Amino acid sequence: MEYSDPASFPGYAIVRVAHLLEQRMEKALRADAGLSVRQFSILACLARQPHIGSGELARAVLVTPQSMGSLIDTLERRGLVERTRHGGRGTRLALSLTDAGHAALSAGYKVAGRLREAERAVLGNHQEQLLDLLDRLHAALTA
Image (cartoon, rainbow, N blue to C red; front, side):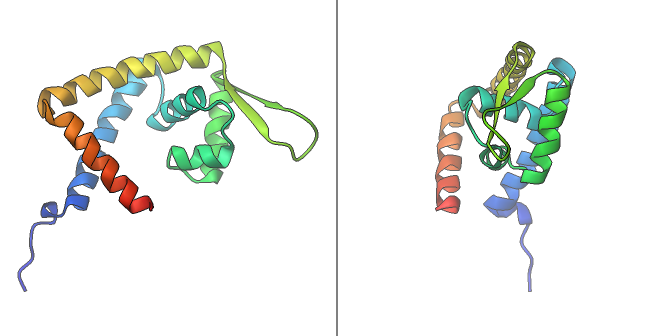
């Protein structure tokens, strides 16, 4: 049996590139915004969906619900998010960005914008096409 190059499989190629992009983004976010990729993702989700539940938030940023608790704890200790409980025991915690959280998110978006421009320099007019193809693949995989 002859074995083909794993890079000829789209899924494998995507995983390889995603790994490199995440490393690059992690390094840039930590250096310029003081955030990890996951922390940036959490802040961005909270900014767009302020009433999102912890489980939904975990799914949105691709972590387990157990990991989400420690990530939120870290963001709260840093003063980037605050939790408020409305009502008694067993009620849902509301998470919101603090002013420092909005500032950190803004710095993170500047980093993300620079990275997007670097990707655009490589992909040119194909960037939108790639995003469309990835959206189609994501929709098919989550259907």
